[in-house]
Image (tube, rainbow, N blue to C red; front, side, top):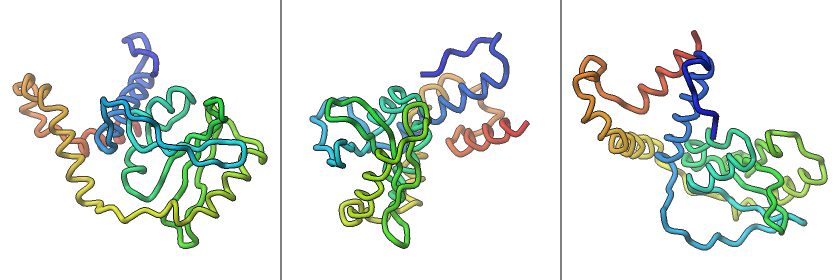
Length: 195
């Protein structure tokens, strides 16, 4: 979790903290997650490593914190059905790397990103077996197309439900602003970042 913001931290730190907050909200909105603890699915075995696909927001955010990286930004990409994110681990459970697979390539799935802890580059002896596994696993990695319009509509509805208590308790202050939507928050944040 990023350090807490205070008024002494400055506007860039505030912007960074706000972005982190919005990324986490998007993970919760776009990805499933449950309070129930289910047993973890069996890992994919890749040479000496175990690869776990991260498909829900809880696992994705836990991985982001453990690996000190930017996986919290990938919720929408995973939900799109065009990408999958994996945690590469030793049999002991120690995390080694995270990799993203582009699932919709014309030549089949392809590794689009591969980073170690804190986004450190990795040695070929770690990278090469993963690339070979992805190339050999096109049937396993195939996904049905996702209806993007429905995905965005569902996300907007979940966001409205999530912020409803805040909106209800601040109606007067928000009256001049208009509806609070995820799209507006993302747009406002992008415009603020350019200043």
